[in-house]
Amino acid sequence: MAEIFESAGTALLYGLVGFVVMAAGFIALDLVTPGKLFHVVWSERNRGAAVLLAGQTLAIGLVIEESIRASESEQGLGYGLVSTLLYGMAGVVVMTVISLVVGLLTPGRLGAAALEDNGDRPHPAAWVMAATYLGAAFMVGAAVS
Image 1: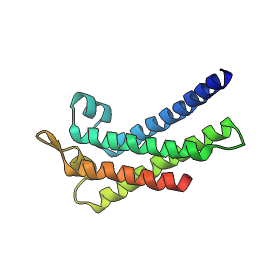
Image 2: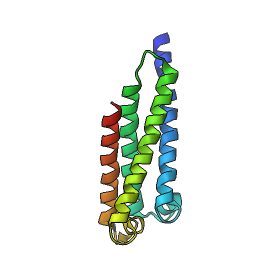
Image 3: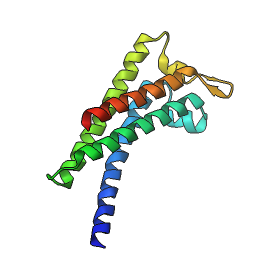
């Protein structure tokens, strides 16, 4: 029974680290898209912003999952938590830099274009950026595993 409680405690700690990284990712995405992301998604119900946020959230989850797998070490839980945090933050940085570079290579402001809803459909740029985040996550995940 003690092992179950220890595992649950470990899961909670890794979950907290994952939450911190997801919050950092949300802040980073908010900085590179026009408007306040929370307001644009929840109040304005912007589908493009929701696609971007969903793609990035999945991407960060993938990075955290691979980071946790890579953090298993005989050096202890503290080492695993710190390495997961650092790997996760590296993933957020890589995703943000890639999105900025892709934005520079495309016509107009990519962040603004991605938030243009056409009736009930998000702009195709939102799907491209969401896929870019997922692609970056697979790269970072492979690098840390």
